[in-house]
Length: 120
Length: 421
Image 1 (cartoon, each protein chain N blue to C red):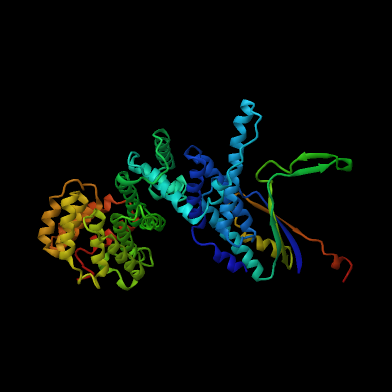
Image 2 (image 1 turned 60 degrees about the vertical axis):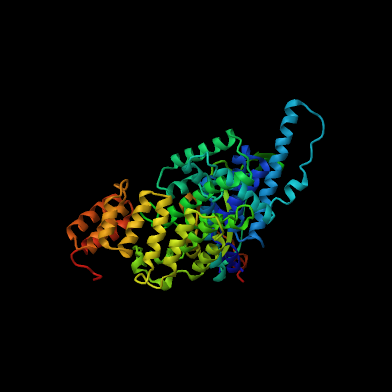
């Protein structure tokens, strides 16, 4: 089993206008998704992120700018770490992501497997 | 673990808690800050949605919401206090926000009290009835303007205007967020009950093309009415009678639609599917409504509903009792709709001919599909098939509900080939 990071971008286009009922419904979909992944032993961890943040750059990290992004669709809302056999399975897992309809996208990245590198 | 989490989230938790929180925060912040209260709650729910989505559900979700909303409200009050000080250059120290004002903010009793106050303000008799309903659903029911517009088959703009008018009225007339006392209570309570009654009716027989029953509207009306029965000041006979009426009607909600979504009329409903618990609650409230010298239209309507609820079958229904209750109801409220129901009852209690005569004398229902449907049924009973078909056609053209159209078409097509002899 390999590990993958699912990075969630955007997906909160209409968040401010959502009704309490719609918010709860969206939440229930997320919970069901995590539940399904946990039951099949594929869920490792996940965290939501607050909007806003800083970008640190320059020599010695002396340049600090607001960021990372201003556009809603670029903002990372959170991430999961999941287990999957390969990239295909990781992508298939994304099908249950509840926020596609509200403009969300997922970046799927494989975590480098150190053991494999050294041939264990 | 996650299963337990999901179970902790009851249906409509966000909607119901948002209604309660709006009432509590508006009482704390003042009616002029109603928008702020709504914003604070929207923020609170958004945070909850994000965190809880990732499996970070707190032990007590409701308490978490209250806690976060309360902190946001305190922040707002601090900023409000700081503002005039900066503008006028005062140097004296800030008044601390009195701990007592916010510490008990979300005690159960305090919530109920706030919701009641808000209910009386939103349902003030000086506010037009449609605005009262919209305002009550928005502030107490936690529904958005779009959801309300959807439920009432009107545009979001219209609902926003109605709510705006209600709010301006409350602000301009300085209607206090109070439960009225002594002499002022009864007329004000009447206005509250009227809103709940209309709300329930819209849910019970929705004008919506696709959904005949709007469970959310019915349950909102029942939830708020139940609250009124729990409060000493508002626990009046009429309140209990209305509650009884809603319990009896709600007991049949699930039996009115078959598995394909088609309407089943009273006559053909499987009475074993009626909700016995709601029926017994109905009788419980009807008992509580019985008090010397107190009588309301709700008593009569609840009485009629109780006869249906108690009948083992359509054929065994005590139509004479129902007809009699409609006669009293008509003498107090001679509206065409009551006349229509009275006429229908008379077709079973007296004769089809008397029902036809009564129906043909009703004025003011020329655009009502139920009126023509009833005429059709009665004509059918009298063997006037040609008339029945024409009346069914009029009824079909007058309803917007697809389900009702479907049912009426079936009945029209069955005029000459009765499926149920």
